[in-house]
Image (cartoon, rainbow, N blue to C red):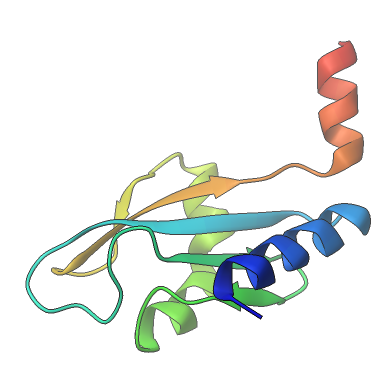
Length: 102
């Protein structure tokens, strides 16, 4: 399965289970970086991940910090000298419905 199909499949499963998640996307790199702009990582509140944005160090940091960082609205966030990412939190289907009807 391609990485994009895996990301979409994981996102659909998380939506179906009403689990919140963050999609982190590499938007800029400087010098040598493991992944290029456009690389994505989904991180769910339950610890589920899909995709990749680095050789490992960012994947270890994101699950611990992404929900906190997105609450601070500090996106895009520079995680290192070489990689800048934009993080977008998603809402559960039920909260999307309640927001649209309010």
